Length: 296
Ligand SMILES: [Zn+2]
Image (tube, rainbow, N blue to C red; front, side, top):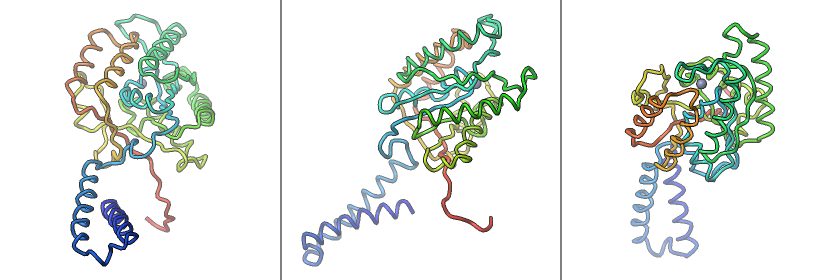
């Protein structure tokens, strides 16, 4: 249908001009080439843009990327670097990452790690060229590690996400989908809370929500098995291409997270990304059918 719509619009535009200029009945010989040209351009255009893209229309004024931990933005780094040039881009980090301990850094869990991770995320945002990060100060593990009450943490975080959306008034929100990237419960929950808020507040048609998703093919490129979830390409209806320069900015921002990754881990990860020259990330636009149905 989209292809037919496009053909129809192009044909109507050409016929409209011809009619206005009184060509319509005088010169039928010119109509045939015009129709062929219209069909060529309509089909060709469709071929170049098989999926919707954030760049199909005017760029969004404000993009809000919301993820669980202070380093999750690395998942979509090149896309944030790309939109930093044309939109007001904000990163919202739901938890403070206090339990993100790693052998190579030897930094203990707790407040000192929170301070370091906040600095690392500020560094990452600066490298991407986006606004300084917003922290919602939940504790990672969201109470599921038995250290805090899950229901209290979840309820408080949900209201902070709500307030942040009201404050930033984004046109576009990027977050995790049901797979939660690595399947981490915090990732899944932040994506779900954000989706839930748009549904409960009647914002789902006013704000374009995009769930990030890997294809199965993309998950194979990484040096380690991170247990990444993936989505069938048929459902990843939004394709974002990025340039090598935007990818380089993402590599620089990734290397801010020194408490989380060793030098060797950075090198392996960046080498794997460089080997993938497709330079594309996918999202699934959360779209609602406006028709009211009476049955499944
Ligand atoms: Zn994470």
